Length: 452
Image 1 (cartoon, helix red, strand yellow):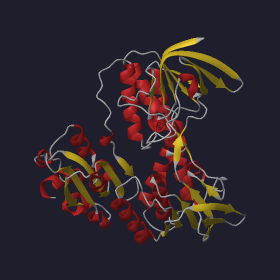
Image 2: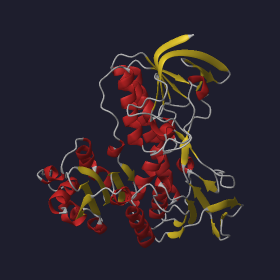
Image 3: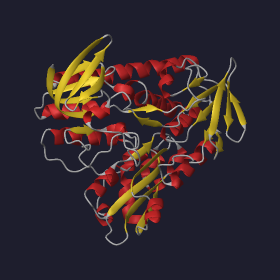
Image 4: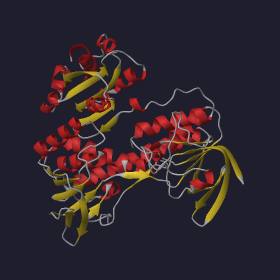
């Protein structure tokens, strides 16, 4: 039986980050990936979607993108995926990480079986980091066929855009693809259930994005009622809601959520079971150093449950690797994880929001600044850029920064200083005294602290 000090199961961004960090501190690392390095995020979901969103940003009109231009976009997706994931594979090689391609299944507390086609091999380990990500949820009656009914993983294979598309789902992914298809000239009918648009965000942000997409791109919003089924035929797709209403389009796109991918791991052999409730429901609950309930087992990324955001995955992976190799590491702070939707304008939040503060009875001070207060917003090629806003949230008694939210150009990056302020318990008054490069959008949090 082969032996490794640290096994990492999963070849996506979290797995790669954990492997590189652990190897940097001298660990003998073996990474097991059931596909090419990059994982689902690098080949089928995150990376392809972000390239498509960039194309939508560049296109920026309601004239439908033609087949040739779309072919250039999909070719670019493949080029970027091969270049970036190839770079990651090379870094692993240079770091001395052993990479094995195959499906991993635990067979004991310190061993697993790796299946490659008809062959199987055993690997013993001292510690393990599970970073197997998540898989999409498709209820009966809404499973993609790759033709009339599609999902994120099919976008890199599109050869033409339909005139009209039904999109089911109001979360991160659904919202991004509504924007992408609408900006590329597709008429979109958006079907959203009773949880609304961006249920994980402050309600104000979901409302702002909905208003923008319906007003600027003519998106038809049908909200408040779940979709029962999608039926495809030779000429299109019919969506039926639970209240009996029906909608018709050439294609349908399904993005209603994802769940942790643990089904094939045989967690029982480790003495673990998927969480039955809470943010980690269906996945692996971890502590503030990414350790599960079993001391030598760590987990990182979507497999640990909500929120399913990449920066959380990277934070957990880095922390798990350092803890496993005995490095002093600060505890994870979920309040410092930005959640972002890469529409245009972007939607982003971090830490405490006004709605959550009210629900928790936490007295806060909310300082708001318009994007129009930053010269850079006026210099952008989109006249609507000045209509964005940022809110800085701080504790009403201590003045310590507790959160931020933004709706506007580059909102995710604009909130970066707020992340540092939250992590370092910085007072808003300290932000007010700082002046970043001018003119930039990065001024906004500091302007909010001074003038909001």
